[in-house]
Image (cartoon, rainbow, N blue to C red; front, side, top):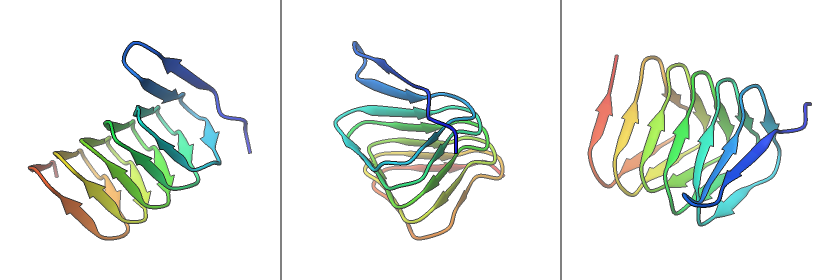
Length: 108
């Protein structure tokens, strides 16, 4: 498994897992999280910020975040809890329960 290439943008409190990377530890931070194209996170994700998953990104484990964007073809293998709004783009999938506190926009 490839080592993840991770970048942090301090001003916006955002952690970025770059494209084609894999990250194998749970993420439980007060941050925003961006997974790049084909990026994989192999554990649960609990952030009090926003989550943005790029095209064909994957998370194996339950996810909790404020607002979530599931990019085209992205997939979560676990439950998804969204405090705010959820936007799921083309062919995004969640293999588990989905709970949304705000609005949900799902594009076919």
